[in-house]
Length: 154
Image 1: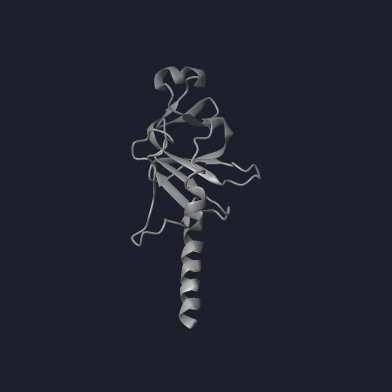
Image 2: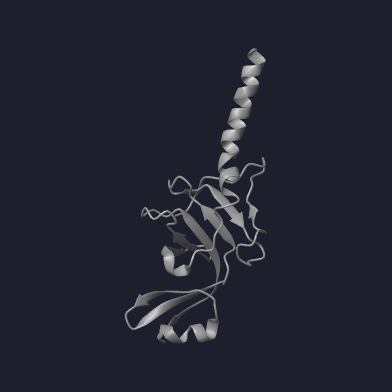
């Protein structure tokens, strides 16, 4: 009976630690409209992280990470930029008469979820083809096979 309790405990722990991956892997990957983003930030490694609030509670809970394909200081009007960059997202920082422009890759390289909204990414999917959400995204796993978790998003 003692071995049965230990086995039950081990199975319960395994289920608990795999539950977020099971519960979210089929439904959480989305490609939100860019105009629904709540913030964005360029990271020191040259990646641009876009934050979304999918459950509309005022906290970022979903992220897409893009390559910055071009960045420069410009004084041209923003309405002229899409003709040069097509469907690549354009972000900018205003400096009065000039602005710093960031042109991102059209589709994200990473999709991440902060399920409990504690400021750490709980699930990270990589889309090496950068072709949008279509089922070929892979859950990032550590060396032990568990999903990579607790990655700070700041």
